[in-house]
Image 1 (cartoon, one colour):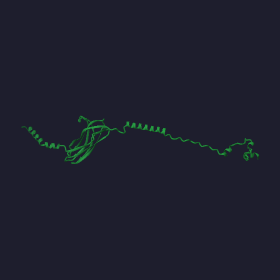
Image 2 (cartoon, helix red, strand yellow):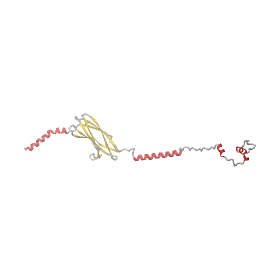
Image 3 (cartoon, helix red, strand yellow):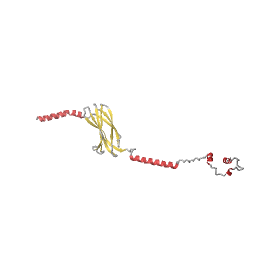
Image 4 (cartoon, helix red, strand yellow):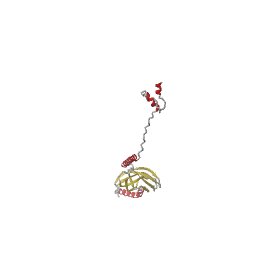
Amino acid sequence: MSIRTNLKVYLCLLFVLLSPFIAWAQEKPEIRTSVEFSGVVHNGKMNDMVISFANNADQELNVVAIQGAFVNHDDFNQVVRKLTAYKVNKRVSAGDIVEIPFKFYADFSPNELGLVVSVDFTDKMKTPFNEIVHSAVVTLVTTESIFDLQILSVYVLLLGAAVGIGYMVKNTYFKPAQKKRTVPQVVVPVKEAEKKIDQSWIPEHHFKASPKQSPKTSPKLKKRRA
């Protein structure tokens, strides 16, 4: 038997002896995950998902990041759009349970898509491993906004029509009574009127008192007689 043949035999025996240790080193730590999610994704807004992680391993683990993607609901291997990865970098001691919130944005037409979310970990040896926490079909819906421009324009038109009708009703049935303006009469004092009368052209006999009249003589006549 040649030296090369002996070397191959020794290498095979060594691999067989070390295979249990290699398998142990590559074994993924025991963890348990759960997700709180409604299964409905709202378009045009942030959606919330809460991931619970229980470290059942006998070592400290590090939650590195959360990532995900929308996929074809008939073929989960066909990625439609990837989600923005969320960096966590949170250490979890053995036996601890933590909750990690995960927010993601969607902008699709109402439809059904698959949603796959996974968490990246590292163990105490900095060895990375991945755990899928959500893999299911979700429903994408579009929520009507109260501030939609078309709806807002309709509200403005209805408000304008209501104001116009109210103004017409007020002017038709609730007209205010018009107040009559009274013009004050100018009263001329008697003394002032007497001063303005010119009696120089009146004949003297008109100033003679008649039998039925008062015997008082006009001041003008007294002056002439004097």
